[in-house]
Image (tube, rainbow, N blue to C red; front, side, top):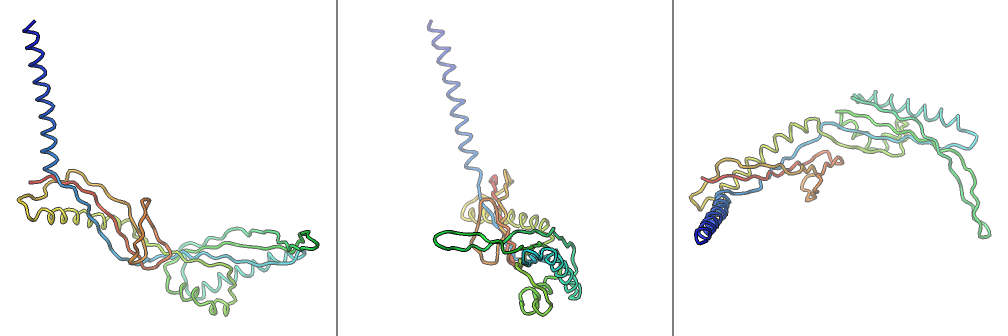
Length: 241
């Protein structure tokens, strides 16, 4: 009976030693690592422009066919003027004409009557080009559009960078270097130095207008600004030596 007790006690001591040894190893292991967050930022300028345009006209109920002819002339004129200016397009996308009925509402004696007014014709167009300066000079000068008989209901400019994938690779590398530099700075007053990378995770890219403080857990890609700033973080863990 006593022998069984000694055996059980011995096994318990061994198990306890293993558990404590494991905790000790983990504690030492944690003390021999450092975790830092590196960051990198870089300004850049867009080299590709998407110009979105809505051509629109409204005609009387009996003038729908004339409305289509008006839209055809406006589209033709738009394309001709773009060509004259020398804007080279990588892509010119034209959507079908959309037609909606328009109504006037007449209120009389507490009642409302809907009266058919005519048709509104709308056509969406967008083009992709590298000629950013030429498009900006045209779009940002309404009088210039008017003089060229270009009648646009809505116009929108979106700026992109064709080498964004390469830029992302470069900025991640810079954030990784920054992470090691931060670890070295944190250990300056000790005898330790960062050694091997134990883990490395990239954060989400934030592409914003310059000097913006906006961030998002899903990432940001600002297309409204020609000049931009890209930033990313690198979460790193280093062993120590």
